[in-house]
Image (cartoon, rainbow, N blue to C red; front, top):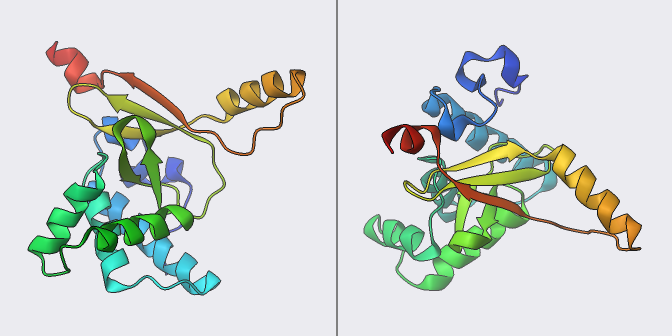
Length: 172
């Protein structure tokens, strides 16, 4: 059973944007993986060994990885070295809501809120490439309002912001 909880009540998840805060990353990753397993069971999707391993790789750090970075890891672990192996697994993870594609980086990052309806914004550090998934509900609401003003209905949006994480800002 996954560790479902209110992040505010959990010392391992107390910071809203975990990538830039000290936290129990092992707890963070294992919780996301456990939730993905439960969601797959509920919807009848198969978290195959390759898909699971790709999710584990994405969960290792709060960074986005390119498909070829993932493929190289898979190949070194004996999962095969053909690009479709990585691309199919990544596509499945995105479709199921277990990963997000970061357009700016042409890369993928694990979703830190699988199974939850949310409107994330991705905060990308231009120095260390850390990626934080931050709540962007107010931003999305403003975008929806602006779109409605011109008769447009937004079906999907990706909000990405480039800047400096606290550690890189401090180092600069």
